[in-house]
Length: 375
Image (cartoon, rainbow, N blue to C red):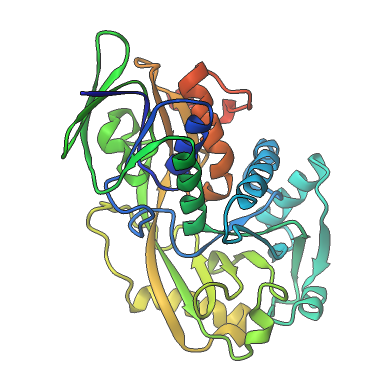
């Protein structure tokens, strides 16, 4: 039976970063992925993901974001496809919007460069935007997007360069602690042992770790791409990524990149808790909610539908991450519950998970993400 320093279960956004950081630190690492690397069944696909520092979710994320940016830039230097694209990021909503207020608070607390613009000023600068007159917008120039699948590819390439072994299409069936304080992992193809295990299995994490049963809940998400009437208004150099807090809900979107069409999604789409193995394909109701938002706020983008795609959020009860060791098995590290806003931080989350696996602690402040906050 092959033995490793660390086994990483799930090689998506977080797991690929963890494998890379572990291998760079000289660990003998095995990454196990039940699907392809990369794949389109979890949370790390769909071409683009927003990256920003104006973090309304909680100011404690901002120092981690600064490190994440540094790590993305380092990874970009090793990869032929550009990973991080700076377009600017707009967080917009009516006066009094919690999202806008939270973004401003993070900017001011951490000295992040930003502007506060009226809807009219936004439209003048970025003609693709048509926000209501009573909206205001936090404009963060350093925001942008990550090429999500290529980020996974780049982390896996880094892991391979540093000697990691990664096996795709090999599903983990079970695991158990071993008498020497390690783990034994059973897959549909074999058995492996390791000193430590990192679980980054996304929507499937709770199948392996019952402690996550109510703490990491999968939710169906749908993304849409529409062909703009005037494509020039929706290029990366003329259209910042956005988050819009409006009466219809809470939406996010991107310029045209990689595939045809401007891209849009609604956070917590229809609030559908799902079995990740039985995902429903996108349908007309999914398309309608994304199109109606686009017609109102970005009317020049509301041309023919180009593409619809499902993905998964895995939500924690408070929508903050879960990054910790298991209370009864400190040799098991968990990264879960990223609640639809984790990918931008995957570069630093991988570093944190590697530190927890090797050192039992991290140099980063991760108190916000502890498992014991739920008990």
